[in-house]
Image (cartoon, rainbow over all chains, first blue to last red; front, top):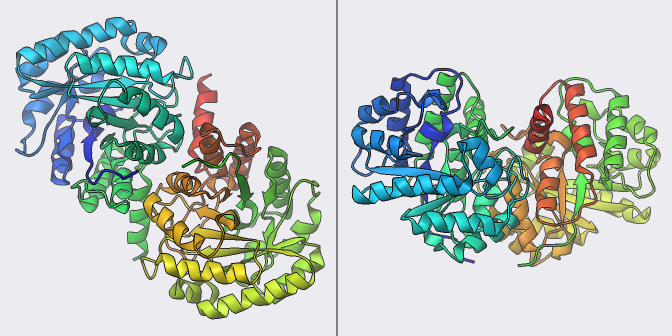
Length: 303
Length: 303
C-alpha cells in the first residue's frame, strides 16, 4: 500500500466555498482570492459558476469574475456549467475548462437540481458534447457518494453507475463528493473500489466535507486506495444549502498539512495558503474552520 | 490489514479535559460528568488527578470527587498519580487503578514536570513499585510522541525507549500521546512500529490531540497498525498549558463515529455521549469542539 508521491489539489473555495454565502461578496474580493490562491501554488482553481442567479445569487457576477482574472500560464481555472446555457455563457467569457455535476441519490438530485438523476446526466451530456465540439475539457462531480441527507445510505454501485456515465460521456476526471460528510474511511475505500471497477483510479478525485470531522481520515483512506487528486477549499469555506448541516468543505490547509506530513508533494506553500485563509476569513468576518490555520495562528501568538 | 473488531476507549475528559480549565468547576459537576459518561457506556474513565494544587488547582478536590463517585461494577476509574505523594493520597481515597506519565522530550519533561526524563521515569518507578505492593494496576502515559513544542521532531526510538521503560516497570498499558497534535498518519505508523518492537501492540494505546485536525486520521492509522485502545475526551475538552496552542484532545464522539462507521464495536451510546457533551459544554459556557456533536445538533435543529 504505497501512497502516491504527488497529489494535485483542486481548489474549490472561490466557487463551492463562496456560492452559499448570504452576504454579497464583491467581484474584486473574489478575483483577489483567486489570485492569492494561484500565488500560493494551487494549480487548479475552480473560479466561479455560470448558473442562474435565481438559484445562486452569489455567482451572478461569474462573467465579470472570470474576465478579471489575470491568468498564470501554469494554472487552470475551470468553471461550473450545469447546463448548456451556462456552458454558452462560460464560452462567451473565455473559459477553457468546465465542470458538470450529478448526484448518486434520486431525492438529492430532485431537491438540489430539480430533476431526476437521469435527466441530470442528460444535462451533463449536453454540456459534454458541446465542450467536445469546442475542444474544452470537462470535469464531472458526483454528489452524495457516501450518504444522502434524504435517503441515508447510498450504495457504492449507485455511485459507480453515475461516475461511469460521466466518464463515458467524456469527463477527463470524476470528483466523488461526500456532500454531507458522514462518510468514514472504510466506507470511502469500499466506494472507491466499486467505482474503480469502471473508471480508472487515475481519473478519480476525492471531494470530502469535514462536517462530521472525518474528511482528513477519508483523504488518507483515498490515498491508500490510490487516489491522487483532491478537491478542497481554502479556510474550509463552503457547504451546500440543500444538505442540512452540511457546512464545511475540507480545508485546503489541513489537506496540505496531511500531505506534507506523509511526504507527498503538492507544490503548495502552506504559509502563503494560511495567509490567504486568514485574509478571506477576515473579509467574510468569520473564523477559519481550518484547524491548521488556527493552530498556526496560536503558535504565532505565543512566539 | 484487518482492523480490530473491538476497541476500548479510555475517557480522559474528567481529568485531562478539565484540568486546565481556568474557571472553578464544582465537585458536583465533575462527579455528574463521570456518572453520565459511565451511563453512556464508557468502561474506563480517568476520574481525577492527585497532584499538587499549586500546579493544578482544578484538581484540588480529587479526594472529594473520587469518594463521591457511585461506581458501576463494570467501570474502572483510574486516577493520575505522578508521584508517591499522589499515590498515597489516591490510596487513602480508595483508588483501584492509577496512571503515571513521562515524556519523550527532555525539554518538555523539564518544562512540564520540572525534572529530567530519567528523573521522571524514576518517579514513575517509585509509584509503580508501591502500586505493585498494593496490587494496584498502573497505566503509563508518554507525552510528545509525535513532536515537542520546544524540540520539534521526536524520533520514534526516543518514544520506544520511554514506552519500554514504563512497560518494564509494570505498566499494564502504555498510552502514547501526540500532545501537540502535529502528528500525521504515516508518522504515527512509523512511531507505533518502533514502539511495538519492544512493547506488545496489545499493550499500547493511542492518545491524539486534534489541534492540527489530524487526530481521527491518526486513530485510523493506529487501528491499521493494530492498536485497539484509544484515549479521548468528551466534547473535545482539554489541552496542555505547557504546550502552546495544544488545545483539544480528540473528542470521544468523533472517535465513536469513526469506529461505528468502520464497523468496530466500542459499546458506547453515541446519543447519550452527545447529550453529555452538550451538557458539559453548556456548564462550561463553551461550544463543543466535536464536529460530530455539532453536526448532530444541526441535524436536530433542521428536523
